[in-house]
Image (cartoon, rainbow, N blue to C red; front, side):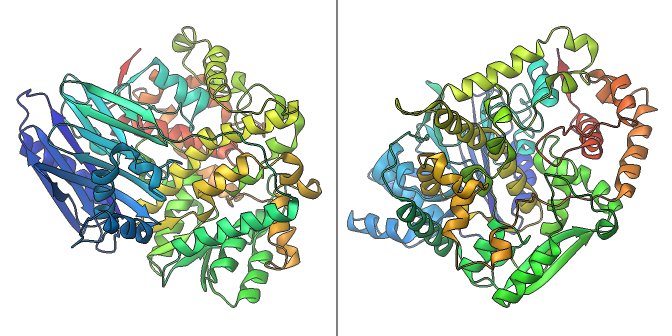
Length: 597
């Protein structure tokens, strides 16, 4: 586990050492055991890591001819051995075979195209005495933020670290407010809620020099191709890729998140993992409320899987008060308001898991790539020209401060972002209307919904010092599934029917055909009571910063609302919406947000 950061100054009288020190201190929360710094004239590169990190102790340096290369790297490379072999045949010699060293020599050998060869989750930056090269993995599993201005360039794995640069201010403009209320906790790709801080998009690289400034380029996107394989051949290919992904990501002493659902059960069985963990909530045995989104309780299915594979299982049970108390740490881990207690639950869960194992695997991503969400199945939602996980724009709009709302056209704002995304989705000329729409929905899920969940996974686990790997999110499997027709994905008219078919004989029948159930949440009314009390305190505060951008009247009405309309996805209903507003208020206060409206 590691983190990177740094800056290139334009000679604006910065005290390099003090800025480096401030940014390095911020990075330590992501990797506090070891840290390193490279300073040369107006350039600073920073690296922080834990002793268990496979990234390597950075910054890492290498010389080729008359040129010196310096790298800072965060992530894991799953095809390192193949790359080492290839680089050695090219004449490169290694005294350090860490992931970072392989990435650095890969760049020296292949230049910008090195990213085409990498398999894994990563962000990195390389300084070659003239320019900085930065890159991010294809699916955005590792973060990279940056700010460009008259000060030069500042970048880091963490928003908080970029804000440690004295020339980068925590300014939120009208678009930030619109994202926060109309799209949040999702956000427009490539942006943050801060006006002057951007995110390097997944599957992109960037270069920066004082003379040329910043240039970004895409090196990967989903491509439409005809699918020629039969159902049997398709399931064999899926299993081949998935098993290879699991093998590459399996290490001794690893644990597995096990909910008893299809995805986590598949990874647990295929990895033969014997240390499993699940999350539950005090009171859910009494208050669990069956819905279409959460049709049944996890525990019976977990017990069946544990018996089937002979695992040692640990059940983490969370209380309403600790969920509410963790809202602020979860927000700080993201650097922006997130999925409320859906985030804080994962943070607390990862902390408990870390007490037993340093690494765990998660089933994240299977719903996106195998069509597990209800908006794949419901044709009305499938063909609606709006993000299916936050459909009611008018519901969201009511919470925007009236003065700001008058200068925003919510329908147009959301529609433009939606249309920009689906227009980039490649389709085939002979796709029928539904197949074309399925591809577009797949593309929306990968570039929007998955990004939020991947950010949640990465930030909460990193804050807990737990490494979490997601074998389903292997770009080879994502590419392959983009082109598998819906008739196969929806085999037997079941969500993730194709994956179920591929896992026949691997999972118990009850688990194999269990209806999809999402990450568990609390159903205990004590949680609603607690966040209601917390927001009432905010409502009584005449100086609460949230009311500079939000409607106090609408939030007050929410406390007695009887709506079951989700704010976002399937899990964020009224209690989570209240908690989201609590996170917004704390974020604005703790980050000293400056409004530019």
